[in-house]
Amino acid sequence: MKKGRTVLQAKRFGIHSCTANTSLLAAIRIMVEEEISSLVVADDAGYLLGLITRNDVLRVYINQDRWAALPVKDFMQRDIPVVSPQTLLIDAARLMVSQRARQVVVALDEAGKLRPVAMLTDADLAYHLVKSG
Image (cartoon, rainbow, N blue to C red; front, side, top):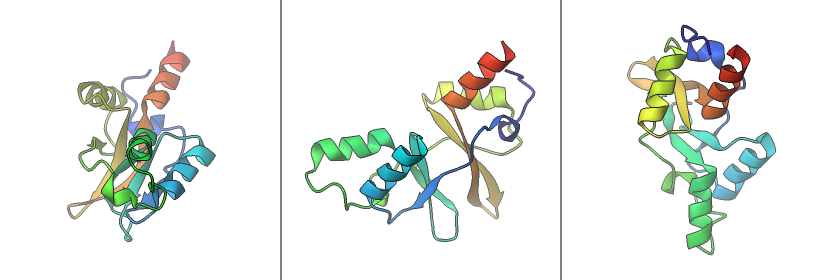
């Protein structure tokens, strides 16, 4: 893994998102169809609100019979690691390890609001470790 590479240079895939009012069933359907483990949750203007993961949905499924129609906003993670597009890959990796996170959201700061532009996952980092090894 080239430690001087930025997170945007290392990103292999696009970003997938949903809104806060998306149902859990619709969210998990996107994750299955796109073969991803999480979705960025954005407001109607496209600014970052949080993250919903497969595990978040599974926790609701286990604990609630009528889980499918419930909105993502009630179960999303709000305190998530965020980095700028200029962040070095090694620094993003350090942040993920220190916060025990499987991903970081790459976002642009627009007057104090964060616009997600990519998501860097542990799978992306593993890919670059193999490629550079």
